[in-house]
Amino acid sequence: MKDVLTPEQISTYHEQGFVAIEGFFDAEERRQWWEATEDAVQRRLSALRAGLESGTVRKSFTSRVKAPVLGMLGPKGAQTARNALRAVLGEKRVPKGFNGVMNTNQGDEDSYYARVYIQCIRLHAEHEQMRKLILDPRIGRVAATLAGTTGMRLYHDQALFKPAQGNPTAWHLDNPFWSFHSPKAMTMWIALDDATLGNGCMWYVPGSHKTATADKNLNIGEDFAGLFKMYPEWKKIDPVAAPCPAGSVVFHNGLTAHAAGANMTNHPRRAFAVAFMPEGSVFNGRQDVLSSDYFKTLNVGDVLNDNEVHPLLWRQEKPAEPAFRAAAGAGAAPVARTA
Image 1 (cartoon, rainbow, N blue to C red):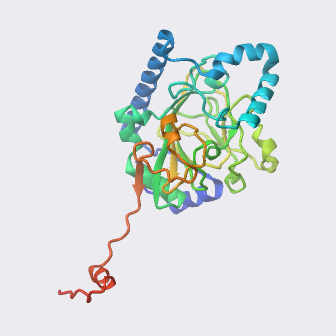
Image 2: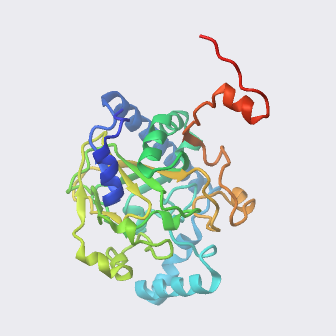
Image 3: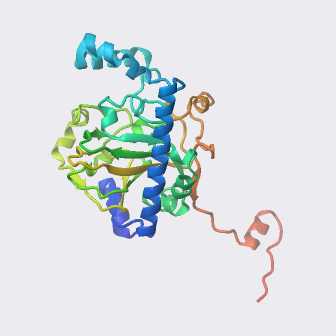
């Protein structure tokens, strides 16, 4: 693992809002990530299919009402109705962002979003090898060093498998979706397959993290460029593509605008994303991917430090205090030293 950063990489991250590191994982590490992620995703999807077939798992409310609503109102009318409900009931009741069953977006395989990518969230919580790979303290140290923070926790993790001929991923920001807000929030995007211009590699608006705000964002849907209506000044900035071979990663700030093109090939483009939360971050009232049971225990302003939900990846240890100074601070005489 290339876990030692150069000054240039740190500078690029802070200036551009993202930095790509080619070959971050060596061949053996890449194999472990690929195999563990593939296994975890297939387990999750098999459980979902079995649950839907047996009736023990219900489709999301959105997927159940989509067909009749679309039939009555059409696509634009349905979106207008959703926006109106969100304004009246609030985003907790009609949320933006992830909305699915069993922590996947595959409850309705025919939806547009389900064809953007196969999304499986919090795989570390149920797959031992995934947990081992994700919670590697070296990764936490790299993330904390880039962000400029003394500690980093896992916010959540997700597999993002863009299927063959899959839909594009609309321009969006990450951190406004999340249950905390921080200018030091970060995502590590891992290329499990070669990510190319043809199969949907990442694209970024460099420097957008400097002017983005937590209250302006766009859901990942069919309005590919809608984010630029919220931030028209970004139309003057040329987006930058980040194609990279398997085993490479791209770290991006949680407020950096990013997207991915359609997968124009007949093969999937597999990726994995780890979302990092600076230690000491506080709850902002959004449920996002938090479980309902955990969400009910939280009040706005609570520190998100539950090690089962948000494990600590790395913390900078304070240097040991000299014995004579500690003793003197306690009111005792300085400790004598002998050679």
